[in-house]
Length: 288
DNA sequence: AGACTAACCTGAAAGC
DNA sequence: TGCTTTCAGGTTAGTC
Image (tube, rainbow, N blue to C red; front, top):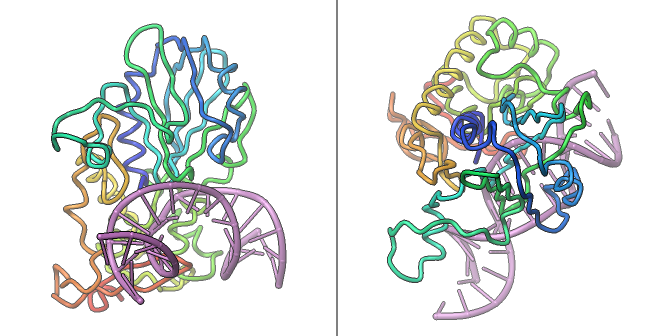
């Protein structure tokens, strides 16, 4: 499930394949949930263009085109952006008729919604089984309501800023951390991990969290996000990095998906509760 | 304005 | 074994 680190890892790995290469062909699937811009329009607008920059805010990728337009990409839950020649372990498992573990090249399938072929170099694929991802072409100077409402990026927010933003908010802290208009980039995994490391209970009322706690929380959050970027992102479920390799962070989790297992600090069983329709995992003893 | 809920979609895993 | 149900979660539109 792509959160900020997975999107950042994707950005770094896909940039060299994308930037400075002239787009020769654009192939899309039928209109679907992922296309905020109609596929035929996308083909028309991207063909012949070149990406000059690829940036990230929260979980959004933003490609800057040489004509001033922009391409907004969100990976949703199961989105993948990767280069031709990558092998996906998950795909291999499902499609392997023969030898498991052999490196077979990815072949575009029904879930591959967008293919960019360039004048030279490997193609770039956007694949998303559950279609929660988004692709949108933005005209030069066209603003995006989606981008505009995002809060500060989780990697750059300060404890003081988070504290002041939480002041106006009601409800449990966990829900606020997942609200991308409060801060952008945290998802369920890293929110739970950051709360654990800063020893704050996810059910705490957001507006009552102290400045000191906010500072600890932001420190912890940035620590886990940066560490996860280093290790190539989590890949608990559907995520694979653009070159097809597994990220390593799932081995470093303390609470997420570990209900009933002993806390690494105090051995108390990790608890799981539902907050705002999402599961939240925490240590009942360490987190207050 | 902010909070809450349902809906979007598919595949893996659990239940029967 | 095989079919059915549940669950996972990022985001938004709609409602209160």
